[in-house]
Image (cartoon, rainbow, N blue to C red):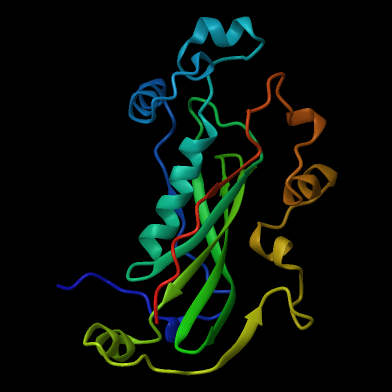
Length: 221
């Protein structure tokens, strides 16, 4: 059976990605990630050291959670090309936490035979608390016919698709609020804006607030 592929013509603004629930984070995983990434910061692997600097225990590197969210978008966008991927770290992930990754198509547009969708991404822990926000741009073939044409050296199918977005005037809510799950209270509002409330700020903040993968080279027409 051929691998599933995603085509632009089948997507609509507001479509949700299938949620990806990862196994609870444990210390073995943190050690393996340290070895694979070369990041041996002791706050992630040394319990005694982590407590000596005021942490309740070791905690997961932000890039580990970014990788989980990246798995969600890469598994979903089969057949597409990732043009942009960035995230913002919101809340620490601790051993025993379960990370659930989610996403929603927030924008689609096409011109000159090139078609793009923007996807809002976010990750929550088992309490429903926002731990990471992000976004990605994916370039897709318009359809199976379009893919077959281009792979055989023919010109692409050209359909002019005006930009459709959750953030336009007709949308019931802003792109940010539509991308993240609805919550109540000031603390939830701060999380949606990418700010951690005083109640959740750890004594030692992660070194980086945002991370972005380098943009891929634009495909030649």
